[in-house]
Length: 243
Image (cartoon, rainbow, N blue to C red; front, side, top):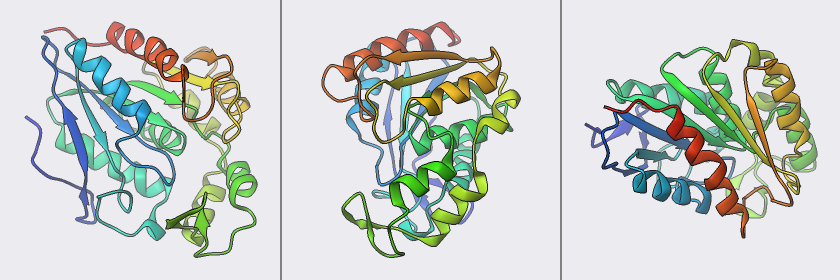
């Protein structure tokens, strides 16, 4: 059963959208979003729909401080999201959990999977790998409190900057991820360059698979959405546990 409420270690309620499956699976696919985003993005809704059609349940979560989840956006960091994901895993005892994370949510998944065997399969979509490079390139000119990506409800914070710089890169945890792992990245991504996934794939030393989608952007817009579903859903189905 899915609990009626999810909370993190700070007691903050985490908003989520649950889409049940109809097949003989004990698997659930948890999806985590990127910075300034939310649980109901076109990519995550498309994956939920395709998984449901295949009989597989999914749970799209909003990390604390984002969307309808409790908490302050100013406190939102990758490290806090890793903790949020751990609380979600606690609540899903009895399920076989796979995780799909986009952008900073991809970094969250890599860091969690490196230390938490409850994640049975991992998918990293346009994942931030070099977080120190990312924050300087994307937000280096922002002062605390200024909107990120033009979104007034997403003020830049020193907590986020310091966390991204401290993490530095997720390549260091790649060798600790031993579960099936798929990386998907568009070649036209101008938010997180495809080199992030190429470097992460190289660091995994044969423990991951990398799918590059030609001319697809960071948000998988246009026909990128169909390409994403085609790349991810069959891969996940191969790693689920019927019955």
